[in-house]
Length: 204
Image (tube, rainbow, N blue to C red; front, side, top):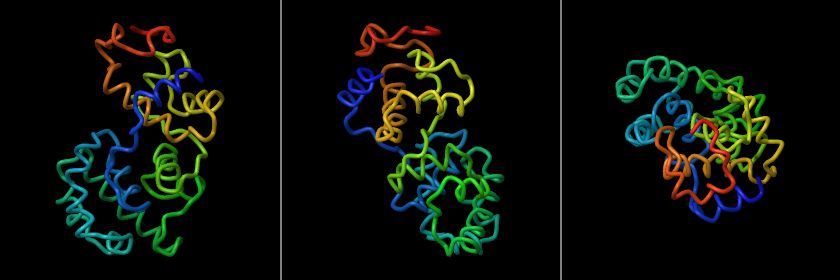
């Protein structure tokens, strides 16, 4: 894993979250919106969304149709609007309007699971308590032989055993970048891959 990590860092030195955000709060809302849709789609609606609703209190007081109208081009927009409103209501009532900084507190929020909590903790606060596992991370981890787990939590636990704690946030961005640039689900570019000699090419 040490060699794989070093090569990924060398080839993707700018790897970072592709969700545009200016604060822990905007990252939290953007991450909730990103479930089962692309970061690009989320980035198209969030400028208007955050101009209209700049903080948790504004979302908590908003009428659901007002949120839905702005995010309607995003998949599952009705349920996401409800989750965001309820999430913000809890943030206002229980956390003084501030995004909490622990896994336990974040995962109590409506619409927030372990994946979203890891994303916010690592990228907004620099707190590495776990690894964000999306479809790209899970797929590449299995292809590289880093895990045999099928579920995100199993993948996360396997990666946590072999990736240094300081790299728990960046490893997700590195694997996502590699998945998009070189190793898509179908027709991976193995002949041009700098990890080819280290990769067992599982499933290819």
